[in-house]
Image 1 (cartoon, helix red, strand yellow):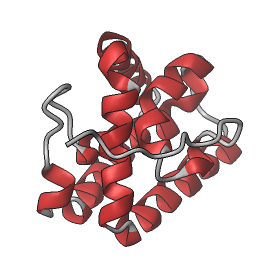
Image 2: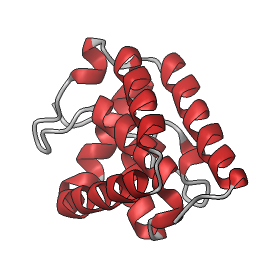
Image 3: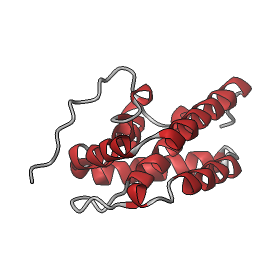
Length: 145
């Protein structure tokens, strides 16, 4: 399945916005992403991994793998800091991984169900609500000490 030119442009626009937002996301935003893993992904890790695999397969089949690899390299450069790499003990996932999965979702959106897309972007949407405009981010609560 080939994406149309307008779809390819939409993918690129979404990826560029994700990269731009990730570049300026401060420590509190990164913590919200990590909190998103704790809050949402803990119960959905298998579904998230399945959606990730479906997106990767669709992207590869559509010939968009080079674009994905470029986006992933840019994300690695942006997320190399310790804040992005801090692992959530409950899920074993990082904020950097949430950014990567959001990129997968944006690029593979045409081939994913809405629920698969949502599963991939939900942790990142806690800091970047434009990823899921139909859902408001939940009120952030610090974990109990």
